[in-house]
Length: 147
Image 1 (cartoon, one colour):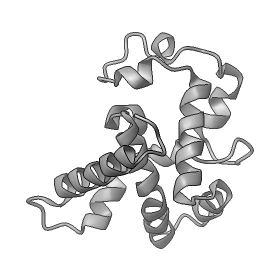
Image 2 (cartoon, rainbow, N blue to C red; image 1 turned 45 degrees about the vertical axis):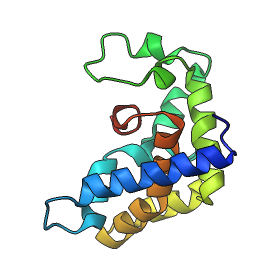
Image 3 (cartoon, helix red, strand yellow; image 1 turned 120 degrees about the vertical axis):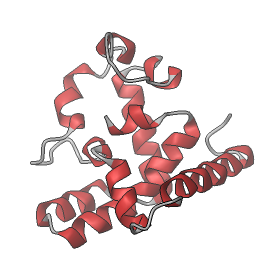
Image 4 (tube, one colour; image 1 turned 60 degrees about the vertical axis):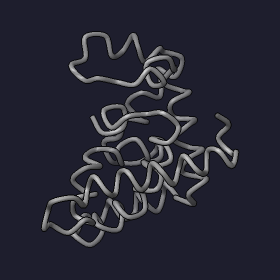
């Protein structure tokens, strides 16, 4: 499925609805807070390489041609075939495409992370959730993006 097709846009909306339904069902807790919890460490994949924060992009910048399958050998997580069949560089290309498509600026996230308040964490989750959904619609699963 092409990333910019009408078919993908339909898949994107279905994925968003499914995730929100799952996060909102049967719990009295605020859905916004549940999104923050669900996203776990997802944002660590989004910060710019020159960020002062511990982030995966910086840690993996010298391994862009490495196969993810090779890196994840023996992982206890059930990763998607899409994720396992990519290189680290290809994975970050999908992240960058998703961030551009959703209008998310990595340097703005960096600034918000520096504040590290409950409000800034909520704003970060609101900004990155659409990126997460877009990546899920591409075929990634939660383990690929949050562990």
